[in-house]
Image 1 (cartoon, rainbow, N blue to C red):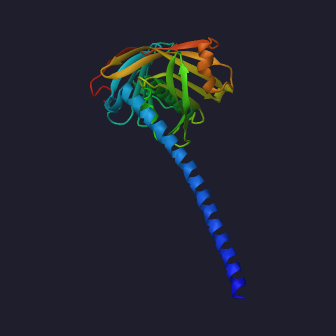
Image 2 (image 1 turned 90 degrees about the horizontal axis):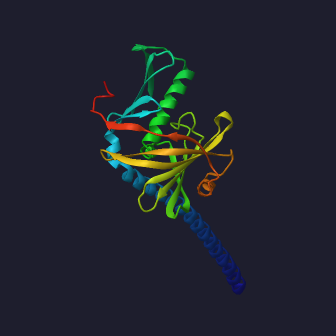
Image 3 (image 1 turned 90 degrees about the vertical axis):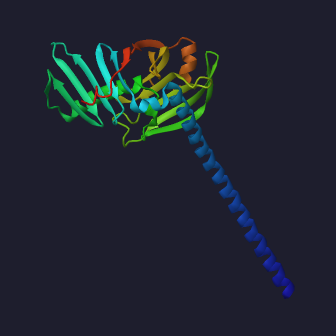
Length: 269
């Protein structure tokens, strides 16, 4: 009887040990997978932070600049949050000024404040924010709504690049939070020389931008872009290869002209 009980207890002991081993292996594998995801996020974050540093770093925090884009004068001041402004004249010669200060939008026409519908506020604020966003890349990649992912490496025109995929959270991600972006960060210089994005509004589209005319103004790097288009549905990761094969069509030029710094009160008045 004692011998029988010993055998039974032995089987139970081995079964328990075996289950623990399986649990350990399962937990280990789960922890390994989780660690890989965490390391991936950390890697993407490190790459983006190095890019921000290369383009201007902490100077963005108090940056106060003016530039011309498509005959409109834009200004931005980051010293007290986000303060953006654009001045231009409409087809009738009216003087238009849009201000977007820490999420609050206003418009004046011939120096008089006008009431706008929620739809118009959304359209005009998004247009202003978009111009500043691209002009000050990669500074805005630090926003809380930005989700960054390291999706590998590639070679473009003989140079090595890290590839960062960016998506946006619904909260704080703006009207087009479902857009997907991809940035190619040069592994040697940490400059973002190429970027791409896909969007779903107005039947969707795919764009690829190649940087040119880089210049540094008081410590911050500004660069222009050739805007290329590709068929809707083209995977963003394939765009550099199509670009090198000259299979992309030039759509427009994104040029920031007459870039200069302003005094600290220019946009805060």
